[in-house]
Length: 260
Image (cartoon, rainbow, N blue to C red; front, side, top):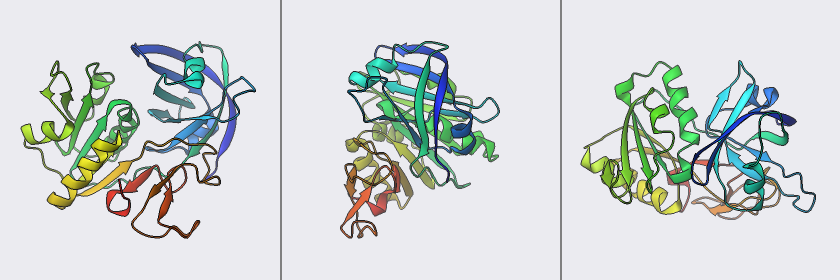
């Protein structure tokens, strides 16, 4: 798949809730090639910060030539991005990584925290394939603020888990799955490692195919530096050790192929 570096124009940016921002960028070459589960590298304008920040694609609009990034402010780079406004420019590189392999089987889309945004395009992609709403079950886990929930509801039934119990089931996404007696043939997931580890165990117990999108610190974003490796069950053809490069081989993996 082709990768492009574009000086994107900021179309809009809003704050969804404290620390979570929703940024839309005009980047037609990236939008034309990108798929659900992939990400882009976004560059700071400060020359002292050379490495880009990887941010997953929340939505892709090929017709408008835009990409939408929903991200959490977690440091210098993302703090800089949060101050971007319509008309500003920002350098982006992508699309990067391996996204979700979609099937027509009954699905559970499971996101936790800042792992929720990339699953919105995944839900939309399944809907575009003609899947019925009842076959797209969406389980979202939050601390408290349920950002993007309303947008997911256009594609399937949404079930919520919150740490404080303010919305939906109190507890984890596994608690929400069990409380609502959900079942599926395939899982698409993104979120923190403890959540993915629990889903891997759940899928093995139930005999369900489970795809996980890994959250990992990255440097180059193209698989050259090996800064973002995760442990794998088989040897990697690039490094000849039991590692996978999250930025290139992933971020999406079949859960059976990696150690979480």
